Structures are given as C-alpha cells and as structure tokens.
Image 1 (cartoon, rainbow, N blue to C red):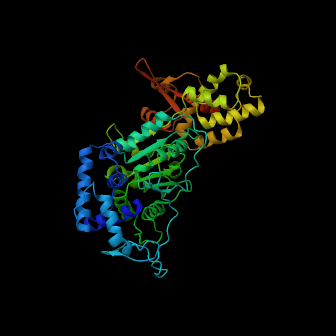
Image 2 (cartoon, rainbow, N blue to C red):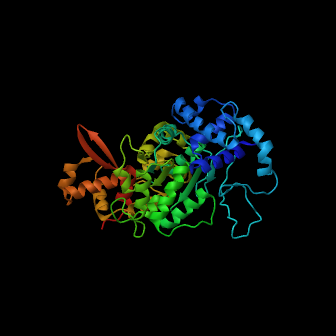
Image 3 (spheres, rainbow, N blue to C red):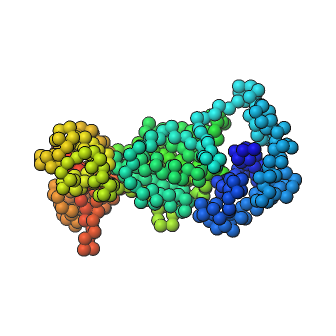
Length: 473
C-alpha cells in the first residue's frame, strides 16, 4: 500500500466523520508516521509544539480506530493499514482493475463506465512524491515563468517571505516594486522551498485583465480538480465557496500582474471600471480566517492592503528593492563589463534593478566595447529602446498631479523637503501629501530622513528619463 493511497483512504474516513478533508498538518502527521519519523520533526516544520501535534494525531487515530474496528496508535498504524489492504482494500480498490467503492455518498474510486455526462474532466495539475515517498502538492504553474538557471542572491528576501508564510501564517502578501526588480523571479524560486507545506499551488496571471467571476471559477475548479461543476453566477456566492475550499485545503495561490486590473491616469490603487469587485476578494482573503496564502505580484499594491498591514497582521506588504551592491557587481562581472571603478556609478543610476542592469549591460557591450566609463562619458546618457519603453509604461500610468510633481522633483539633483515642495508647487498640502504617497508606493521616489526632516528624491534612472526623454508641455 502506498502513502498516496493511505492519505486518500484516511481523508475519506475523516471527511465522512467530520465533514472536513485532511488539513496540511494532519497529512504531515500521517506521512511522518508512515515513514517512522518523530512528532518533533512535524512540530518543528509547522512551528507548533510537540504536544499540539500529539493531540491532532490522537484525534486522527480515534477516527481511524472506529473505521477499522481496532485500536490504532502511532506504533501500529502502518501495520494495521497493510493488514486492512489485504483483507478489505484489495476488494475496494481492486488494485490495477476498475471498481467502485462508495463510502456514504462519496465515490472513492473512479468509474470510467459512467456516461460522459457523469465523467468529470481533470485539469492539468500534477502531484508527485519525492525520494522519501512524501506526497508533494498539486502544482498548476501554467502561468508562471520558468525558473532561471542564473539566480542572483536574494536569500534575505526569501527568508522574510518564508517566515511570513510558514511561521506567521500570513493569509495575504503583496510583493510590489517597479518592473524588472525581480518580483516574479523571487516568488518562483520561493515555491520549491515551501511547497511541501501546501496541498495545492496555483499561479495565475491577470495580464489579460480577467473579470473576477472568471478568476474565481478558475480557482475553484482547479482546487476541486474538475472542470464541470455547478457554480453560482453570483460573485459573492463564489467568494464564499472559494473561502470554504481554502479553509479545508491549504493552498498557495499567486495572482500575477495585479496592476493590470488597476487604473492608469489616476493616483495609485484605483480599479479599472468593471474590476472594482476584486476589492472584495482581497478584503475577504485578508479578513477571514483560512489555511491558505495568497501572494499578489504587482507594480503597485491594491489600496485594501494598507487597511490591514501592521506587525501582527496576517496581511503584509513586501516592497522589493534592488540587488545588494555585492550581488550587482557580481552581475556586471559576469556580463564581462570593464572599468570596475565605474560600476558603482552604474549601479546607483539603475538602483541595482537586475533587468535594467542587464539591458544596459547589453547596450554597453554592443556600442561601447564593454566600457562602462565610455558609456557614462556621454551626456545625456543613452537609454536603449527596451528600457525607455518600460519607463514609458510606468509614466503613462501616472495621474497629472504625479507627472507635475515628478517634473518638479526632477529639476534638481538633490532631495527636497515638503516645505520646499509646497513653496514651489501649486498643489495644496492634502494634494501634495496624497501625490507623494502615491509616487512612493509606485516605487518611483525615495524617502530620506535627515536631521528629523523627511526629504524626497526621484529614482535616478526615472529622473534621467523625465529630464531627457519627456517633452515639456
């Protein structure tokens, strides 16, 4: 009898007697028991006490004992299941042959003799075991980027996200930052490090601006592992159904390109017309208790995030910044660039953004013979078409107030205070404060504290773009 078959069988027992499927901790206990591992290992993995794991296990053994009509403990669980396989499961599962076994109203085995209307089409999810025969989660990463062979060190960021997800049990995390900073890459590399803690891992992109009802339908069907399901048309009812799913099944759900459902031409976090109901999804995921974790990947965070975040909240915002200086220099070295004494100027200009450094590195190799000094000697600095197109996308998302303020901030090279901005701009103080907050949340300006005074300055590459590539009106 395999571990997968045991997990499936016990899941049906628990569902029959409690109305709930096995959660991730119960599955971990069963895996550990099957493999002869100690409860202390499970407790360490799930950041709980050994006493708590023992209590959960004791409840499991009681439920299984009633079904098998013999006393089950950790010490005899595997032997009891193997005996049950010989006496009962062979007639139930009929290993290698098609058969049905109905426990209550639940059909444990597929019946391929059913009519086409009764046969449900499986979604392309995968579930495997590792070398220890431990059940791994069902992965649906159809919208996820490939894992890159070259991954520059983000150990600090990965540790923070892992702690939030596994130790703090965060329900909703937004990873935000300007394009190219590495949001998708770091989330993609996070998955293999935490996947054993989840039953399902799903990556979906909102690049095509899917309406909420389509997104909910897709998530519910993927978690249920069927495409034919009677779903209510009302999005509130669909939200309720999704919450119930992620309470019973521990899921990691990544929603990528969230900025595509947010409106351009306005201050940050306003939804496009017809997408306002996504606000309900994010509020409910953050407010209601459940066993899963949603990660939003976006250039800018939805406004609802700021209503929740604090040190103890299950909702967190992670604004991703550039690579460390050491890692950025390693990147430039690997690209074969010359004049390492000038690398710091290049890193500062592009704020250690890995994509921007990659693009400008290619330009330096093709036009300037790999010489960073030669590239920096020409003023104004040349920005490649690839880079200017990216910066243009960010600029076009801005409101008119943001564009005005950025132009004003870009006039000089030094950071300026709020009082200085109020003197020079025509904005009222509420307008100025709101606009500064919006620009900071878009990762387009930096905030500096000097002598108990808050100063603001535009990101260097964006300041250069505005001064030299945007025509004054």
